[in-house]
Image 1 (cartoon, rainbow, N blue to C red):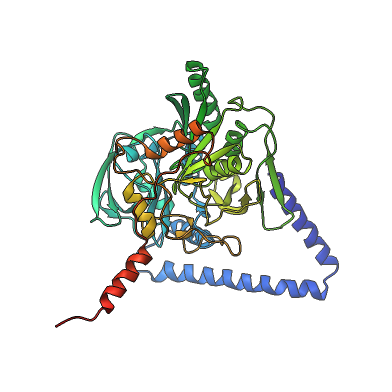
Image 2: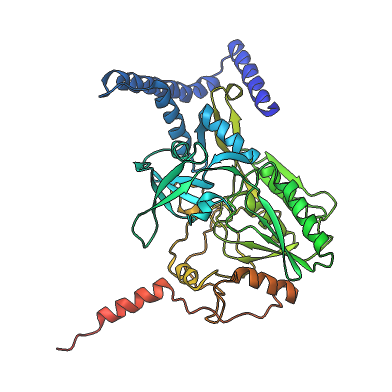
Length: 461
């Protein structure tokens, strides 16, 4: 709040000064502002025309809310306007309890797209997957709706059935019936896998750090001789920045966790760890994949850069920006969700669009390995046309053969990425872990060249 108050005071002082002395520079600076006022007049003219000439009566409030949201979403995929109802819903979600299906969604070219289903929620149990498109809710199309409008249709009274029409790559559209529940998101759980603890964090709300500490303490009490920890951040869509910082702090004794830098290069905010490692120095492996996003990437990047953990899995989503929720009139007029900064890992990396690459790349299935080779199903921050740019010269890794995938003999009921994380802990590091043969996935470009070569062969008659 102080930050915004200082901006307001500065503007007032500038205004008072200009009344006493108007220089040529001030007049020049006023010209772009005059253009803005003309454009606002244009907005009023368009609104007036719609009110009087549209084929049916319109709701001015809905029109203006839609215009505000459209203005903000044109900036980047994560900015937007929250009307008072959606602002209340967002606050419920960050508090960790709300009614709905358990989906983290966004919009892409007017289509609702799933970032990730949340663990143990109706959507996850129904088989909704990251990268799915939702085209209709209860038979009503959601094409062209804002993400807030689409979410409003999916939320509602617990116990009611919601039918989602799903479009998934390489399959015909299909319906999924899901019963709404009160989503009490428990974002941190833990269990033992042999000699190693597994701490699963599925998101970051106001309760995450407390839940993580309690979950770890429970398994540590079960096995005081625990030899290492696997931190599972796969398909974690992110959440609150302060919780990402405090989760990272659980494993770090000191030093920087993350920094965020705003529009002014001098506007840098750094977050540092305090003394105390919850695990007592146990070796850690972090599991990530393309659904690991935002706050989850902050944790993964901090532990990787600080040499506190090694990463196993697939390149993360690549959301390297920070959104600030700015209430309007105390929330009475809703709020702005505005991208105000990029964040940087301790080594100074911005992972915007590019994501965090694991120390040991491991595909979960052989089909996933082939998809990576073909660049299919690779939904990430780079998929958005209006995503913030990556650092100059940086690009997300393209089609390639992933380092590892389950061998033919591997039991498909088991979790291959988890198995390889355990192998890294057993062997002491990724470098010391015996590598498996590369999967037989063929690069799309190799396949394409082969087809061209085949087509160019002379045909015997």
